[in-house]
Amino acid sequence: MTQQWGTQGQQPGQGGQQWGQPGWNRPTQAWGAPVAGQPLYPQQAPAGYPPAQAPYPQTAAYPQQQFGQPAYGQPGGFPPANRPPAPGGPRRGNPLRTLLLGVVLVVGIGFFGIALVQYLGGGSDGPLSGPTAGQTVEPPVVVPAPDFSPPAVPQPETYGEATDWLTSNKVYDQTAPIPTNCAVPRIDMTTASVTELTDHLNELTACLWRVWSGPLQTAGYTLPRPPVTVYTEPITTGCGSLDEVNAVYCAADQHIYYAKPLYKIFPADQQKAPFVVEAVLAHEFGHTIQARTGILISSMAWEQKASASEAKVYSRRLEVQADCFSGMFTVAVGGASGLSNNDLANLQDVMYNLGDDVLTGKANYDGDHGLGKSRKKWFTTGQQNTLMGKCNTYTASESAVR
View 1 (cartoon, one colour):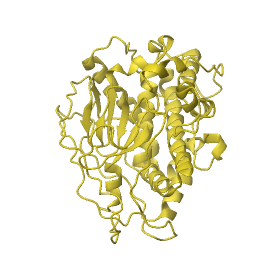
View 2 (tube, rainbow, N blue to C red):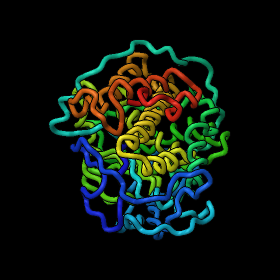
View 3 (cartoon, rainbow, N blue to C red):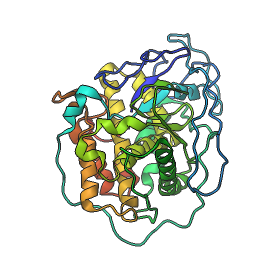
View 4 (cartoon, one colour):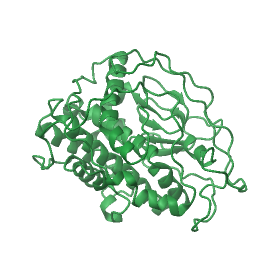
């Protein structure tokens, strides 16, 4: 889920990390100095990328549906680098939203080809000590249909406010409903058809919404249910072009994209393991939580102002927090979905194998997602806690997100 920054007319491979490359490109757009009270984004940007139109009827529940791939025009919506700043506007309609139109978070789980051999590492922490039993705590809910025209995400207006949203966000005071009675059926991601995988992942977002909508609403935020598109070849999205093996949350259209061949990057013994594909999507949904609570845009604002080394720290905080939210979700639905402690512990190993060091084969590699031990630690932290503040990576030490 490395940040890719699209520009109008951007071609594949320009700007942002593609799988198979150990490095990542820094955004080039300049912003003003981050002083207290200064507008966070003084730069006016062109009109945003149009959202996809729903190709299927919107319903109030979540039965299986046929999800067609939405049509997109040319990616864009991001101004040229080094444009002179212009006065900022009010929060609604603030040019800050345009930053999102160039942001795509790509799950850090893939260097296909040579990197595949690096996945065979890590170990289990053994039985979980977190909450796995008890009465279902979530009330009956009507799950909304996937939202192809979601409202704008919250936008901080100053760097000081952005810092507050990162370190003391109201969502950190909320508790995830663990356990829930939302059961996720099993699927073989190696043999499932595009239609089957599309249905499965879009139904999965119904459970994800059921787990996270209550805490976000209590904290004062809204949580639209993002659509999921499964694709089998390079695809053009609101955030630019994606290659064939990616899993992506695109903040431009608040839409999740998942490549059907993604299973090929996993070791053979994990390709058919329970809940691997679901944990990946739960990580992407973690970025949805970050976007809807202002964490994502606040983190990206500071990352863009930071030096190259400091920017990587911001990126790692964002990524391992999504790992933590993913871990929390696996326990929330684990009991109803028939997952054992061994199944849940195996997912810790999956996250370990997605570490920057494991993927590159370089010990202590200074990447933008975190070392295997860090990703595993934060995922496990999510599994062992219900308070969302336990996933507050922005007050943790740099070494804790290394």
